[in-house]
Image 1: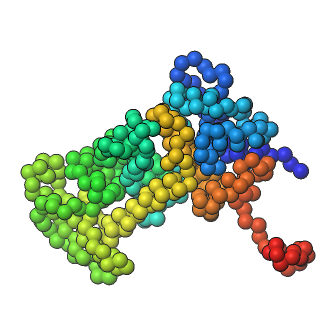
Image 2: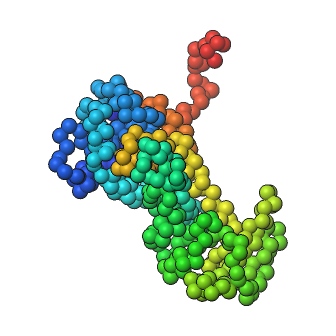
Length: 386
């Protein structure tokens, strides 16, 4: 029988070790680590993300139980005190840099989004991760509450988190996205929390199309009315100009206002965009696609360890979050290069059960075909085992 490394070792090979070590040297704080390496830290925290380990003790015990299978990973003995110290003292920016490397690889294999246009499409949103104020006093959010906030610009091509920032919970959403530079010609869709005409002017100057919902109370006048196609759900399509002094100072160019009624829910939506060429139904469909980022946040909170932390310091929390993002990209890359049709949730479930098995990783995601008509029947099992 052929020898194979563990499934976990094969997964980590998608991140070349020499690239990891080069980044680890760039992001080293203090003298070189003698007891525990950054690679061992990444393997321990990455394994915790895949298998749902809840604490440092849980992580270390799980690794100790698989001691003989850690040889090919290049991971030695991991103690709880050493792991806690590295999480606290060594900068999390290492995993932020690794995230960018993995993202570049994923983009090369990601499928296209579902629209006819070839422009990049990004959904922008943020999600708050609640913390205990007594345990995490550095993350003050409200008077009796602590939190960090995960800001994401999700590329609809492959559902890749192409823009990621982690801030304290009180940071305004629009403050973060103003620092992101989207490619010229791309499309950015956001909800009403990002209704900021200064940011829209910035996007317009960069050659970026934006789509969002219009807030109530925005003062404008209609300068032109366009015909709409019946049966599409579009009620009206207008060109507008802002009329308030503050609005015109922030954004003086014309805007497009599209009113759409969902045929299923009967809800009425008012969209605003700087795109004047695409049909109005496409504008509504672009905003509808924004739901993918809501599903992204739901997925990582349910299936990765981003709500319960194994360290209390800011650096430890940031390290755990960035490792979670790296593991998400590793799963996505595995799905792309092996052309796995399964959902990420199903893939993760299978990996959890086979993480230390010695078998080819691609065999895990290959559904065996049913036996042919000439195949001999298998052994008959008792009904109680069926």
